[in-house]
Image 1 (cartoon, rainbow, N blue to C red):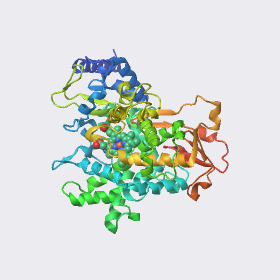
Image 2: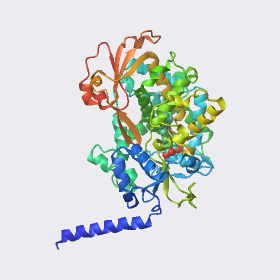
Image 3: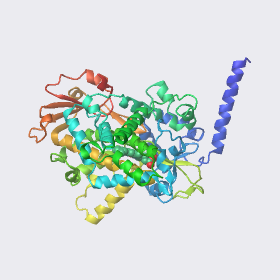
Image 4: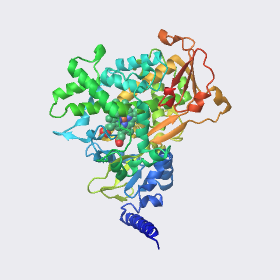
Length: 533
Ligand code: HEM
């Protein structure tokens, strides 16, 4: 036998022994699931590669019921009754990503949220204020500034990025004004998500390391030479510049509007032992990274659903008007319910002592458990029949339904909807995102007639959008025709936009095939290479 063959044989034996060892050691053998999931995390890796976890997780739960083993130490749960336990506020279970690095230059910048200093959870200092700002409508003028910029420019896909920057520093990134992605931010954002999941290229496929943390240590957290993914360094730099400027110039935010930066500086001066410059800047960076693409996804999904045309909104849409529009609220809730922005498990580590499922099965401590919003949001018991269909009416009182029964049903749905997560590590920006997306969608549908389909697609009535689950669930190829409403009470800047075509990102062939625009505008949603054209 030649030496090479012996080495291959040795390697194969080692791998096989490792898999067998994993299988017998796995505390989750008794839980159903794909057989190879008990052997290694490769099953999860290939599942994420396909970008279809929202579908496969639902299929697995339909087949294997409420607890499915998807890795030697990973259990996917689908019973909404467990939300309060897994994402408990009183005695929080540790979030898996919190075990990783705290370096803001790197992709995993969420970890500071678990830090507790002098008995105070740092995140609470920020998220509590979020709700207050929302209630006081203090953020609204900042959103209005970017909506006006959007109406003057041609691009929807930059809206959420510029808005988050505006709300954070009273300074937009400048994409809407420049009509291009000045720093290549969208590309970086996409590639970073691909680090978590995307089958598009061999390299990015290889980099889907969130399913195998060892690889993460070799690539993102490599102490000798960091190999990937692209970092959010631009955001850290931008944030540091704005922070520095505010201190150097000693001025309040521009336009006299109190922004996040003002608030964080205020919080820092009130609690200097808890909030330092690094923490304040970390939250500014988080705003942009966690808040831009996610909200863009919600807006894109809302536009996809034609039913919005029935909303019949007033102009111009201010929050106090919008909040009293039950149909818009129902549409936005439904959009995020059937198309939640995050599509993998929200992972937590089972604490000491383990826990017992309602059916009596025991889950040992140290197990990674989690729920996928795409699975929970499709629970028929809570959300009713046809969980895959877009039915805003499920959020409204049904015919003949008593108010009390409706309120109970509504609260149950609201409390189960996992779009923004749950418990102490739930989304910090849900109120901002709500303000931003409701206002944007209201503006769009007040000023334009929006219809699904485009000239070419009339020949392809079965056209479907493309959805990729890369942690954030990205959509593309949504052809939408936008036409200025005949009677329009809006700013002069949009009056000339008589016909507009809006379509989803990365549809290069589609863009090449566009018919000539008359006196129209080309809108884009989401991230797109087209912006470089
Ligand atoms: C439609 C829009 C959004 C969706 C669907 C969304 C979804 C989520 C989800 C599901 C989580 C929880 C992850 C987990 O439990 O593991 C989360 C966390 C987070 N989100 Fe959002 N988000 C959105 C918008 C925003 C915005 C606008 C901001 C910033 C202003 C933001 C900032 C954050 C932060 C900082 C966290 C981490 C919280 C923590 O780990 O403690 N998000 N988001």
